[in-house]
Image (cartoon, rainbow, N blue to C red; front, side, top):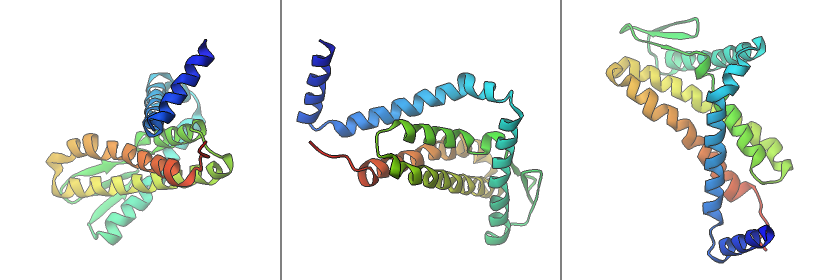
Length: 189
C-alpha cells in the first residue's frame, strides 16, 4: 500500500514536471530544520566543549582580519582595529564575535550538501568550495557593516538584521541552485 502511494506520487511529480518544486521543498526543509536544531540545543551543547568555542573564535578572527584590512587599505577608511573590533572615526564600531564567524552557515551548508542527492565525487570538492564562498560573503558582510557604521549608522540594526544576515541564505540558495542545475548530474528516466 505505502509502496503504491509512493509510486503514484513519483509518477505525479514526473507527469507534471514538479521535480524543481520538490527540490526546493527539500532544500527549505533541510535548511529550516537544521537552523532550528542549531538554536534549540546543538549550539548550547557544543558550547560545553572548549574546542567549539576556540573554533568559533578562530573563525571570527579569520573574518575580522581581512575585513579590517579591506576597510583600511582598499576603502581607505581611517580605523583602529583590535580585539576583533573595527573602530571608526565617528565613534562607531563593528565587533566580529563568535556568532559572526559563519560557523552556523558552514554547518548548514555542509549538512545540506551531505543530505541532498548527488555524487560524492562532486560533493568532495563542491562542499569546500561552498564553504570558501560563504567565508568570502561573510568578509563582504563585515566590510559592508563597517561602511554602514561610517555613513548611515542609524540604519545599522536594520541592515544587519534584515539585509545582510538573510543575504547568507540567498548565497547558500544560489550555491544550491548551481549544484542542482549545473553540477549534479541527474539521469533522467
